[in-house]
Length: 331
Ligand code: PBG
Image 1 (cartoon, rainbow, N blue to C red):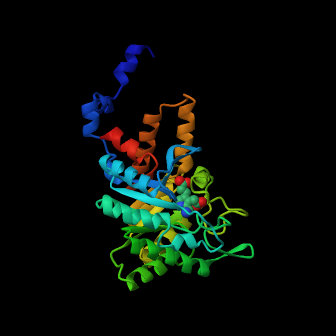
Image 2: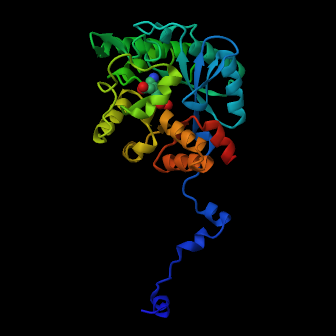
Image 3: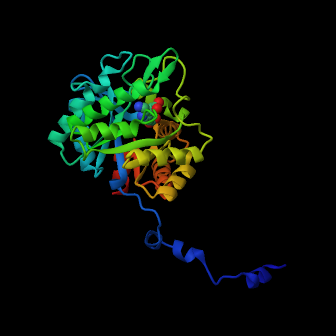
């Protein structure tokens, strides 16, 4: 065939390129729009005053004392990001994670300070014991095992202490069985009916949490989290887990990590139609940062492409260390 014949044989009734011609046309037909409204910004709150310590494996992420947390939250609000997710770094750890439910610990103090200084900010708290236990596990260890029911009792105490300090939403990330219902019951019994629960429902046992454990100093001293976090190979199980958390009273369900689990996110959103969060976790962030530092990738474009993909797969909320940077990029 010569070139003329090829032209004659083309079917061009539909030319897809018509709608790709200019930035304006592309914007009109864009299906997924990122908005700062959907971002949640994680913060690591530590003891002390004036502390702003960068996490070596997460450039741009800091451990912040309560006063610095309030400054960061003020700037977060100015960037148009509506919510923060607080993690705590206690001064002392013990085998029952008492820092997790201490009314004067950094997270509880930060909740009160944020609600005083930046009252419109939605304060979400991570509820787990791993940052607070000397062994780094998410619950009470008996022998070499995590005792589910004893752990739930302490996790409930942590959630209640966050609610008492003024948290809007508590987010259990421990993956113990029955914790969502137990938290709901305890909150209601104490007059915190209006405090919502965002459950880390489909939380996988992932190597993508590595840099976070530097940030939160929560690497288990022995063993791993395979007996409670989900096997990365499973998706039907994720749907069962989400169904159960909804039954127990979860208001928002989460899939975590995000980018390697977009299929799970899509299925959770389609199956339940619930407010669905995705957590772009620490290594998803650090891998981009490391490649960018080497000059191998275009960081702003990769950042927005990853976040857009997470939204396209069904996330209503995206928890991301890029929240402030991305909000400014799309403003
Ligand atoms: C547990 C918790 C973890 C993360 C959020 N909550 C770590 C873990 O399960 O080991 C990971 C977040 C990230 O990697 O950015 N409290």
